[in-house]
Image (cartoon, rainbow, N blue to C red; front, side, top):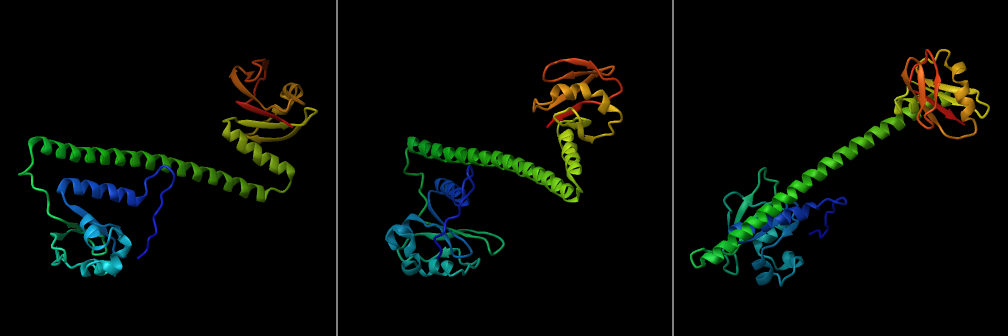
Length: 271
């Protein structure tokens, strides 16, 4: 029998922990001690009477000291539909209470007589009901948290796919580039797209145009030379947003100049 423990990503509850919460709720509602064995013979939980009366408090003893019914489950032999009652060597009431469909589902069984409410006082009954409700509320809260975490993880996965797609497209474009100028153009196209600029220009230290990207810039190079000269040596990119009638405003220094007939917004990148 494997003693491996399934783990979960940070922030998520492991599958076995969720199973344990559900079995806790089932015990609280039925008043019986519950166990569960997977189709692969892995014990997820053993009822308290089994542990205390037969196994010496150790689940690892199930293969050697367990009853014939439990050993059959560990040996991956599913109980048949007519084996709902379990013969307990200790005289405990035992039965299968959940044999999932299809037949490869886990087996849930209960040991010990259900607690009767006849001998309980109203206060004890209320306390038991409060315990049941508390388990239900805890389970509902846990499920709601898992749902929120699943949504967050789905969003993160989508973001990762988007980033991978961008990297794939860039790598493919770089691989097809025939020289440094072509690499500049590919990079400027991506930068212009990311910043929602129609045109992007790369100027050297002397204010000369090295490369451009985005839509057709026409005669924009000559009209942008004053901006490029002012940027030379600054090492900072500048975005020009077209306001109206060809007036462009710098996002950095709020300066204005008449740049007629240019598309926008524009992006200037100094080397």
